[in-house]
Image (cartoon, rainbow, N blue to C red; front, side, top):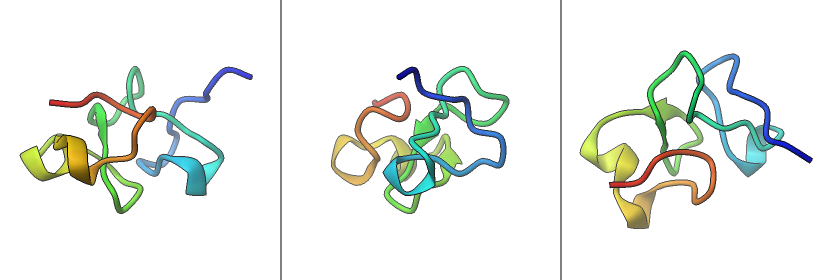
Amino acid sequence: SSQSLSKNARCGAGFDGQTCTGSRYEDCCSRYFYCGSTNDDCRHDSRQVGYGRCN
């Protein structure tokens, strides 16, 4: 099953496995299930692994 692109800036396992990468939102998926681009959103220990870019 391929991941669907985020349609509402939400992402991760709690939101149907939507991914931020390639969506119209920022590329990282934060631990709060939002697409973002800040260091906190993208840090390896505070993001949703597999649902967005990682710094």
